[in-house]
Length: 150
Image 1: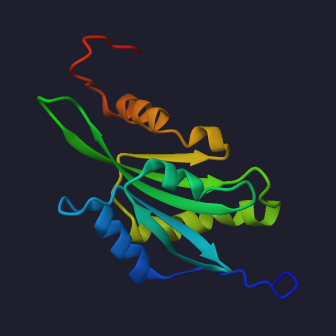
Image 2 (image 1 turned 180 degrees about the vertical axis):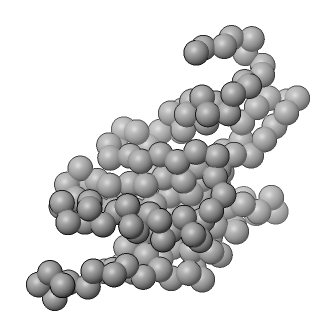
């Protein structure tokens, strides 16, 4: 134990799983969920459909996880893809950074399905265009543009 700080992260599994199911569901408008630390416990902080609201949840001095649904493809083949985001703000201390890989492993047990995973540490990277580009890179076929960039 470091100065009485609890080292083991726990997860509010019910809130995390409910938000995860909500994002995955085709019958709700929910496009994203954000999971944040409340002390040493990770819980769902918010869900929504407005990307700007999603972006507001990530600050310089905190750690968080995001889960997002993004529609890819074109009229011929629309597909829902999911992204798992690990956020470590640039001002997060070394001890908390070190714990993030363990905490991420715990989260991935509850949020197992996604096309790509991104680890971000700059606010500028929380950008929908960037997410779509990364999905397209990972997804192979990108119909509709006729352009293939390798």
